[in-house]
Amino acid sequence: GFPSCIEARGIIYNAEGIKKITGKDFDPASITTLDGFKALLDELVKGGMEAPVAIMKEDWSLGAHYLQQVYEEREDPEAFVQSLYKGEVDLMKDEKFNSLMDTFDVLKAYNKDKASPIAAERDLSEQGLAEGTVAFMFGGNWDFAEMKKHDYIGGAGMMAVPQNLQDDYTGKLVGGGSKFFYIDGSENTSAEKQQMAKDFLNWLVTSDAGKTFISDTCGMVSPFKSNDVACSDDLGKAVKTFADAGNLVPNYDYAPDDHYSVLGAEMQKYLADQCTREELAKAIQDYWANVTPVEH
Image 1: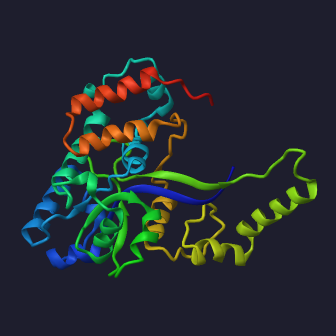
Image 2 (image 1 turned 180 degrees about the horizontal axis):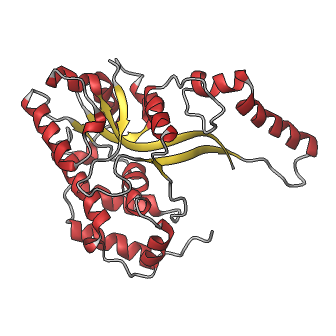
Image 3 (image 1 turned 90 degrees about the vertical axis):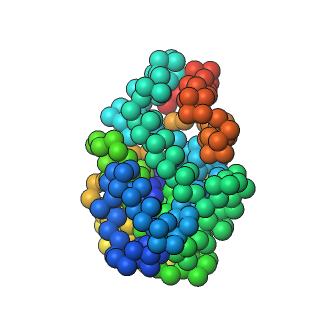
């Protein structure tokens, strides 16, 4: 496929909202560990931001984005997934799983919708983040499209998910090429139409108008280094900084089709304190051991 943009996920922050409470400019690079993150959350609460975190309850966010990092943040994601298929993984003994779930537990503890997390409305979470009444939310640069619908005060950016486990993935977002175009190469599409499609894709990448359309008009992060037009989207600008520095962990794209719905539901149960970490781990392991492997 032909990627039209780069998308990445991590912790979205509102630096202006944080500064209103702490009185200091927020430097996301200063928060690398979970302990450091929790200390800042405590400072925000003490300063009057009663609940500085929002958590989206959607299964795609919990299952396809947050949980997915358990597979992606390791040297050989494919080998790890194959071990899951074979039932060889004990997640309760897995450093990465426990590290990410420790962070998730902290997000839960400071969640503005803690009393009823599965009733959380995404629009209200995006509004709180845009207006600075909420400081942090796990998500991706696509969330800026929702944030800017509200009274956005500025200061939005992205940082890596803070973990006490320090490894090769510390300080990195997860992401890569996205929104792929495909050209029908079958007999149903004429050679002339196929060439027109190729010409359009070349226009997106090589022409000044195409570069401006992607980066400025659409506010997307171009996946092509030849595009030097500044991204007009604040979260996109942050993602581009990570991409340019080589600080993106590749997506793992071969989870079964029902992965996010089935395990997203399990993550929702965990979010609502309807199961323990041990029960969540078992549900994840049972899912992988009983699902048909994806051919690729």
